[in-house]
Length: 171
Image 1: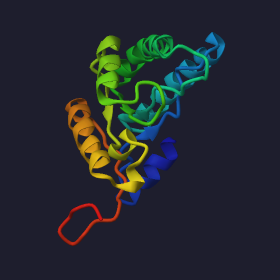
Image 2: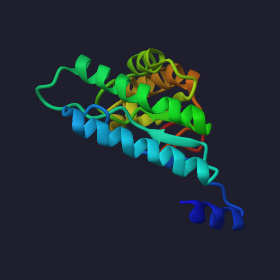
Image 3: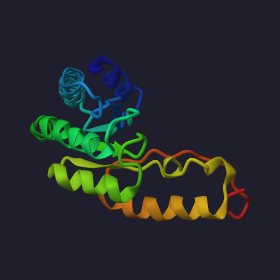
Image 4: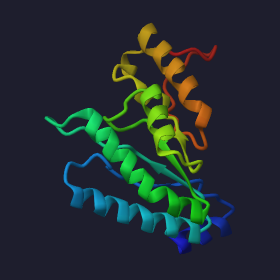
C-alpha cells in the first residue's frame, strides 16, 4: 500500500482513505479476533503509507442472533482497535453500510460507547433507506435527517450521485 500511495502522490493524487471491510458482529469469537487482528494491521499499513482515514463498518446481522448482543460485540472490537488507531493517528470512519446499528442514532450511540476520539463517521446518505431508488418524499426526508445527525462526527464522506433536475432537486 505504501508503494501505491507514493505512486498516487507522484501523480498528484491523494488517497483519502482505505476500506477496512470489517465485520465485527460475527458470532464466533475466533472470527471477531481475526477481524480485529486484520484491522490493526491495516491501521499500521495505512499510517505507514501516510493515509490517516479508514472507512470501517459495524457488521452484518446474523439471523437468529440478538442485535443488542451484536452491537456489544462491535463495541468490544472497536475498543480493541482504537488504541492502535490512536497510536498511529488514523481516524476510523464508520460508514452507515452494515445491518447492525442501521440508523444515525444507533451508530452515534455505538461510537460514544466505544469512547475514542479516533472513531468518527463516514456518511453515505443513501444507505439510510432501502427504498432510495424509488425516491419517495419520505425516503428523501429520512436520508437528509439521518445524515444531518450522523454528520456531527463526520471525518470522511461516501456519496452516491443520483439523478437530479436542473434545479438540483432529486429527479
